[in-house]
Length: 200
Image (cartoon, rainbow, N blue to C red):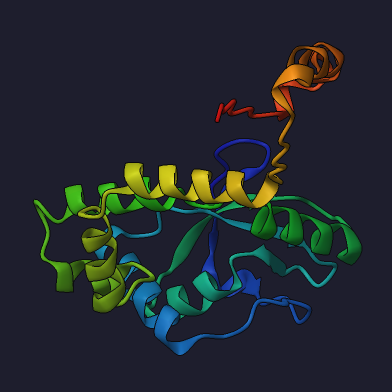
């Protein structure tokens, strides 16, 4: 086992064991894509491990990668060793690593997919990404839609839903007094009022 630093190590695959408490669900389709990904790129994402009293190391994060690495007959892997931490600490770290992820911006993701497809075939991309051919096609099609006008219409619709209209008719001889009395209230709430004056 060759040390790279205090925590970063390469370790024989035979020294690793899966975490029995791993809460991530199995997915054969994603496992196949992960296998294709690792076959294409190698192990470019480390796994996180902790030391056990048995002399083995439990995988804290990367249990599905471990399964694929075994299937591909890797001899050793790159890992971050947390040392002798408790099960509860390992579980907390797993949740922090797995669940503290940013959501994708759909438009930017679609733009990125379109850019990738200038070099790679869509079927090739399907093999190593979590998306189906249909997903990839729909993302690219989405870019042909005029989102600027759509969002504008959506904002206008939302504004209409949030506003309430009042129609008031005032006799001409009382109009000036009415406006004078109403002006302080209008000024107080001017950011939330849209007034359309009309005359008959």
